[in-house]
Every structure is written in C-alpha cells, then in structure tokens.
Image (cartoon, rainbow, N blue to C red; front, side, top):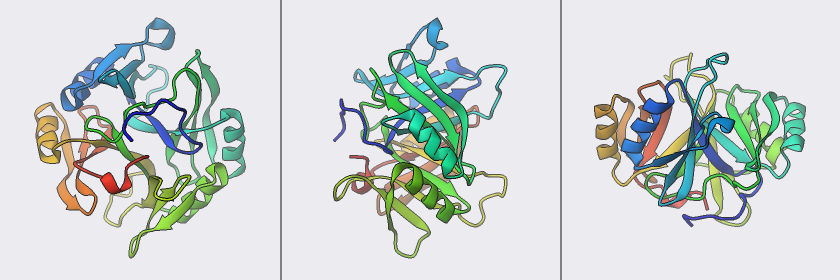
Length: 262
C-alpha cells in the first residue's frame, strides 16, 4: 500500500525529517532529487517545511535553532498512541528523553529520544497529521533501520518500549521488525559493520525509494552531494548511501518490494 490516511500502528516508522543548517538549500537539493514540493507551515511553526508528492506528505525539512546546533541529520519518528506514556517507557528501559513531549498545534504531539546504544529517534502521536501519507513509491520513504554497535541491547530496548518482535536474517546480525499480522515487516535493527569508522554513532537510517539508484546518485553528486557507498545489488533491490551537501546521510533504494512498509 502506498497511500495511507489512518494513523500508523504503535511503533511503526511514520515520519522522517531533516534538521538543516540551511533549510532553503536542503529543500532545493531534495526537491531536485525526489521531485518534492515543500509547503511552508508559517512563522508559528518556525517555517517548518512539509514535503509532498502528488499532494501526499512524505517528510519534513526544518531549520535548526541557532542556539541548538547539531550536525544535520535525518530523524526517524516512531508512532505512538500516547507520547507521554512512551516517554515513561523509554526512560524505564534505559533510554533518554532528549526533548520532552510537546504539542505541535493540532497536528499532533511529539518527543525526541535516544536509545541506550546512542541512536536518536522521534516519537509521534497523530493529531490532524498522521505522519507520512505516501510511502514505498519513488520519492517516498521505503525503509527505516536502526544500526548499533550493541544490537542486542537495541533489540531489548525497542521491545520494552514498543513491543517489537523480530525475525533474524540468516548469517547476519540483522533482524527485521515484525508488525501486526503476517508479512507486515516495518523496519530493521542491525549491527554497525566492522570497518565502519569508530566515530560513526548508532543511528536510524532513512531509505528513500527511487526509480533508478544509479541515476539518483548521479543527480545527487551533480547537486553537491557525495557518495558514501556506491550503488550495489541486494536481494531487495539496488541500494546506495549518500551524504547531502550539509552532511546528512541517507540511503536510496531502487526496489525493496519484499520488505517495504505496509
């Protein structure tokens, strides 16, 4: 399913946004890459940009507050039926609530947290905005995964907070997250592979669907992006890892039909 109008189930990746040091440049880069149109939400919401495709929401692009400078990054938000209770569960399971629960007008309620292995993520409780309404199509999010140097601790944490169950992939330290019902895989948790520089922290990675991974890489590099990992074939499609001109890392996927959000 590509279009969704109902709130996402608890624990499902439901939104991504880009924390930018130059919002205008970030919007230009991703609009050229994915064909987005970005709507300014106005001064009351810090001119946060809502990215759309065919009138459907796919993600957000915001400007970092000058008093809170952090490296530009994509943040994955996990759906919650009650953000305040989820924050309590995060703390009880050894995580840290970095930004306490707060209302975002009538759109919903959110918080930002860090798991015990260091990965940051958001929590979103739907109001008028459920999160992404278009996924699994070129220009939209197709996959989200947590990469950690202590995957077992991450597995235990997300189970305690969101009730996750997992299926381990053979011969790999990688687990798919099983949603409600058979065949409903909603994301993954895996180890940071040996050889990755020690300064790379645990993180949630966002994958965007594209029609052609090689062409997308060419477009990104011509627009000032850099390649972290050249396009390569997998059983789930042709993947590549990129860094945008501001330093935020993201992945693109030619096809991941077998494991797409549902």
